[in-house]
Image 1 (cartoon, rainbow, N blue to C red):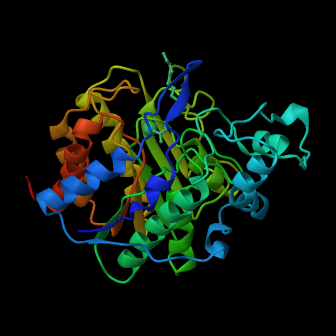
Image 2: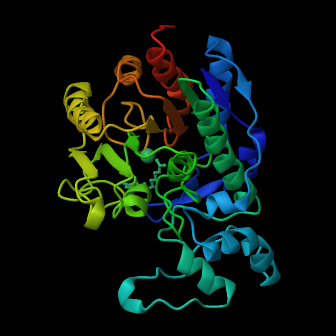
Amino acid sequence: MITVFTADHRLHDSKVELFAGKLVPSFEKPERADVVADRIRAVGVGEIVPPRDFPLDVLARVHSRSYLEFLGTFWAQWTAAGYAHNGYPTCERTWWMGDRAPGCVEGQVSRHCHDFAAPLTSGTWRAARASANVALSAQEIVRKGARAAFGLCRPPGHHAYIDSCGGYCYLNNAAIAAQACLDDGAARVAILDVDFHHGNGTQAIFYRRSDVFYGSVHGHPDQCYPYFLGYADERGSGSGEGFNRNYPLRPGVDGRAWFAALEELLKEIRQYGPDELIVSLGVDAFEGDPISRFRLSSTDFSRLGECLGAQGYRTVFVFEGGYAVDALGTNVTNVLEGFEGRHS
Ligand code: SP5
Ligand code: ZN
């Protein structure tokens, strides 16, 4: 399987992140993607190719122009305002506060960040743009005939909304790839999100649409980030009714409960009958993950790959979360090799 990867992800390096009120060394750090690329080379999963550049218009099929403009100009505005450290919101914009578009940079960052887990650095825009190019290039490889491709994206994407960043995510890579797939002629695309966290951004982007099915198995939002979306009764609305499915599981579950939920979700995806499958591949459901609370083993990730390979869809894998850096390479390559029916 071809992997798309670029070292440009390193341009985003926040060094520290705010974790339960404390500044700690970032869990979402450049080594994450580098160790996965290293392991892909070591195991010989397949060729690693650089992404090509896609125009801003392709991103604007998912994100608002004003949000893209904000991301692209943020650092220049922030430094012009006299700041030199990572950008964070001053407050959160909630619906009862109104929906103005303030001109000052502090107001804009508050308008466009929905939590405190997506620091904006000097290189964030370039890295996020490269990450979207990685997902789009992987999708293009599959459209041109490959059975599958892996977009080794960083920063991740599934918590990013149409016009806001959060949860380490800035551009929603999976959503951008799904939209590109539709724009390339597909009628129906399914996004399967196996990251430990619910992909609130992806769900919100497609919630009222029937051309993209979104399904996720994740830590119960009553106990786990992102807290406000990911409940089982969220099934889509309007013409999207029935095309959103959530399987929240209690913290602590192991492969048994996790695969039972996955099998149910895969049944629903088969009923939907997508032209292509996009997998939001976070591996933070791993038992050794420092910020997540499921108990999947490295062997379970091989099983996940086999399970996905058996579905028979053209498949684009898009990298999301996973913070147990020492096991990250193994867990990701286990999925990819399992998909291709190989075992390392
Ligand atoms: C892509 C991805 O995996 N994003 C995850 C973002 C998670 N950020 C917030 C994690 C909050 C963890 N809970 C804090 C409780 C400390 N005791
Ligand atoms: Zn995650």
